[in-house]
Length: 263
Image (tube, rainbow, N blue to C red):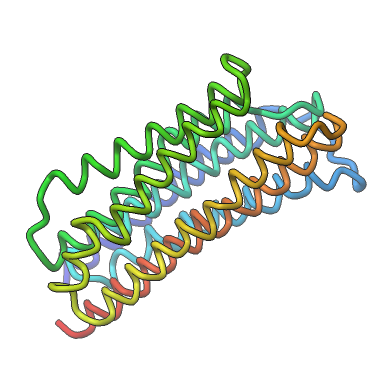
């Protein structure tokens, strides 16, 4: 009983510390006024608050799951925590300058996207022995995708070659989770609800992540007015993060709770 109470107190302490850090970031630019007509800024605000709520939820829900699933929920909470902090800064950059916060967004993705890929490895590792090669193939694909996107958006190379590099990295990830070793382990060794969660997660990586190259295409490759393109690009990216970070974590939470209840 005392051990369980200690775990609850510890988890709530983690949540409180996380919320404090995010609140400090929220007031980084207290003189910033959000206009009611700034729909991009509004989308930054809405999603930053959703990420804060998700962080608290994932950390507190660790108490409901078996030990082997706690790491997965911790990683989900870290993804939304890191994203929330970056969203506060991205929101302020947009509201103050009206410019795309490319650097902050890619710093966020450089940390959170590999963590999302690790989740595939973690949910399989909770039910089977998974070779390290699965982990490293997912990491390589992720880094190629992110580096390709960044060098194009930051203007280091032309947008089209960068777009192709990023797409190749994404395709490599899709191959691993649909036809590679990760997919085979899931199909042959995972229980039904883990298979279902794995399937939903990989469809998020397929459909949800497709939003990013679509946004990149309309933002950089159509020749449209740069100001309007940047507005559309940021709204698309912001909405995509709801699906790809929050919904992704909710799927993991669902399978972790259901598997723990069987124990």
